[in-house]
Length: 148
Image 1: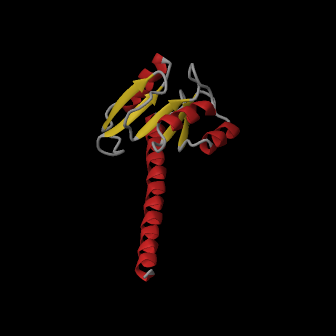
Image 2: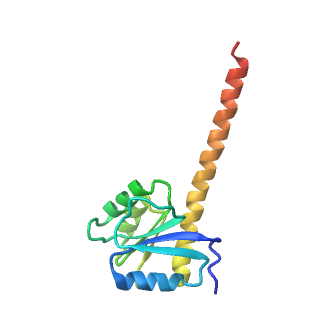
Image 3: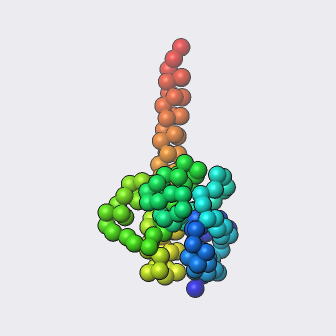
């Protein structure tokens, strides 16, 4: 089964466990994507979506999401965690994650669905911003046209 996420998707996997990183990479094999693995939050890069483990050596919990968001302000974040409660899920979403899945209990289909959801949510946000900017430009033109 192919992923059909999108052509040439660039995915960053932030995972400090080599075993978990290999598992996630294997689950994404066959997807039309380039997968980059890092054991910490990199300072830069260009990615369509980031899969970030909540429990890293230098950050933990929603602090990880904050660190990723500082480095990648507009890139969708999918949180990977070993334990997920309703409260933690809510905190992740409130902190800027677009989707969440549980490592070890999520199959390929679940992970791909989370990636699609994250990319879709961020795409909708961008569409809304573009619409608002277009409307603001129209209003500016009207003001400029009516000003002598």
